[in-house]
Length: 277
Image 1 (cartoon, helix red, strand yellow):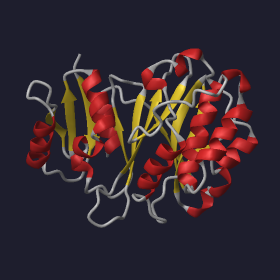
Image 2 (spheres, one colour):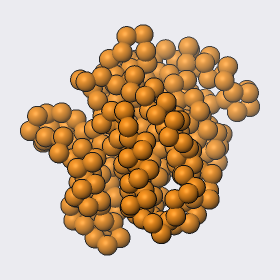
Image 3 (cartoon, helix red, strand yellow):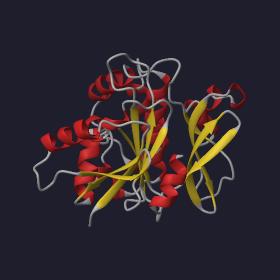
């Protein structure tokens, strides 16, 4: 089944991006760039696997026409409803001004797996017994959190909590569900990730501990603090990315000052165009 990724952009060198994509894939597998509407383009892959592999292994090339991004935009894959991509501009001269975070979201059983754009977390540390719960996971967190910026710590903390919350055995066996590789690998890649961040346009990971229910419970207060809840002030007009749940589902939200924009899966092109504008 073909998978279409909708992308909103102000300007795009379509020819250059097409050449980049064709150089990265065999002709039979190369994605196709199409125009849906004014400043709204699509990249169509022949299969969901090719799209997933492309976004994981080559995000800069696949999203090559987001380099003129002025403010955060959303890339949403309607067929793979479980995947939402956030793009945040970063003011680094001569570097792609975008930082990408991916969230794989299984809406049926509530299991959520966090994945950084370079697939930082490859495997969970094998020595952790799933029955040890928070104490063992916090030990891993404290080890890998050394010398990392607040945003990186927030990502890792949220990931660890999700693993604990969804403590299902399959999450430790499936290749795509393995999250933590090693302390040194985590530090190296996250430090590299930090090079694309600056003080003005940092991403804040926020978890709202509201309307807690047994199935969709968010982390306890101590975890919320770890994930920078205290660092976000709705009055200061800054942008933050957060999570909340309602109607027995978790929603990904963008907090911009006092406004909260709920990010839902795009179901059709008209909806995507409306969201993009």
